[in-house]
Length: 208
Image (cartoon, rainbow, N blue to C red; front, side, top):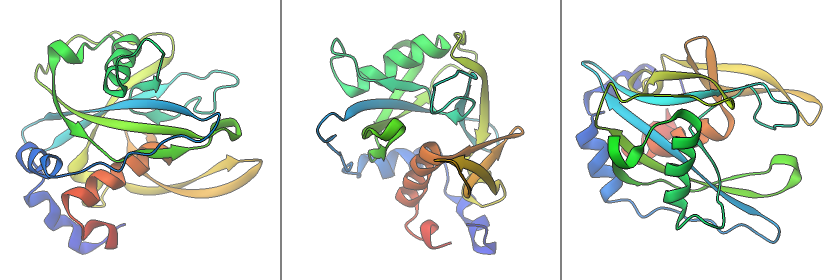
């Protein structure tokens, strides 16, 4: 996605432009197949002087976890007690990093669902977008989270943070695109969510 044309995208990447784009967006909602599961994540944004930043968690190393050690948005599986997938995203965010989005966040909207296949079982992940209203909102990561990192959406969208890295998938080494954030890489499902967001903001982005 690295292209000289992409630097122009910074000119309109703001919370106002994001709000406008998502207000006009009708999300592509997927339904899991038989024996599939539903999950939700929270993509949390905050403005700084020159950038819009997104919050990522670095998942702790855990045996048997298909996303062990990966960068991700906070989130998880929908429980029977959850009123909605949006509630799932908010509950999981509170559990994983101690951030109460009802108190400290402003809901912006829903993005397209993404289908994953951990352990050979379909899972539909629905991302929900939030603006962080309080920059100094307290964070208290639990044992599932090794770190909380912020990455610049501007630099991701203009291509300056784009990178590739090899990962072992089903026993084979494959190269995947991603974004570098503080020495880590955002790739896979979370990268696909960001692709959807950037294409929503500017359809030209996907074409580079």
